[in-house]
Length: 312
Image 1 (cartoon, helix red, strand yellow):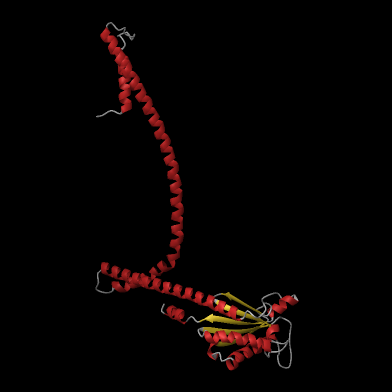
Image 2 (cartoon, rainbow, N blue to C red; image 1 turned 30 degrees about the horizontal axis):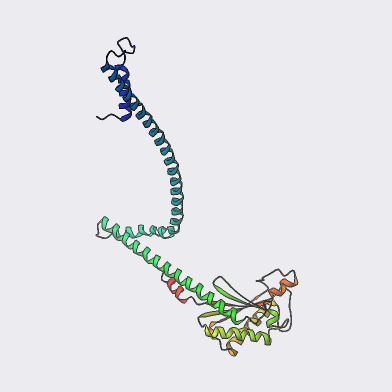
């Protein structure tokens, strides 16, 4: 067995000392030239062994320092590993809804037990069927996501087209914004109607005509016209309340789009909201003015999306 270098050095060192002592433990005096030469070489070997020992001690110190540094690096890597593992767990939670469907497998398994297939074949068939169902569902989810992205793209394009078409109208008369996957064209009361009236004014007809030209070029868009009022009560021979007024206003705009500007009536829906969906508080005149409006809500058709949902 080969001894470690440090042990060898120590043995050599102690051996040299032992050879230099007499039986009583005193240092032997060299008696001849040979002994003197021998002692000279022993002294040289002792120095070499001492130097080798010091070198090994330095290596040991460096090794301990390197080990400490490696421990620091290891702890940093371990912390990074835990962080990445937590991220993986968070992402994995998104798939739990699909995994929950495995409860249906118990019923499938019970039915298969009644057949002539052995237990292994029954379980394999059930697992295969469930796997195919999950793959099909993931495929449908991917298709739905693609359609939703396409709808967002269509809605963004429609929003830009409508904004450009209606640039000539002032911001206090008309605004265009996109929310909830739809385009909202909000026309103020002063643009469309006189106070207490449901007849569309000439300037309002210009705005409706401009919008109709856009709608006739984009036929895959459903159109909802909503009439809104403030909370100041109204009661005339023609309108019993704000609700009746808002319904009449939205209906007149629908007729204008259909009869005058030839927008397909099947795409149109009229609704009166009265005072019940205000944009601002009715406590101040400015808020009431904002609430007296007609909103034309444009929704890209989702026929393909509904068909995919029906397949579930």
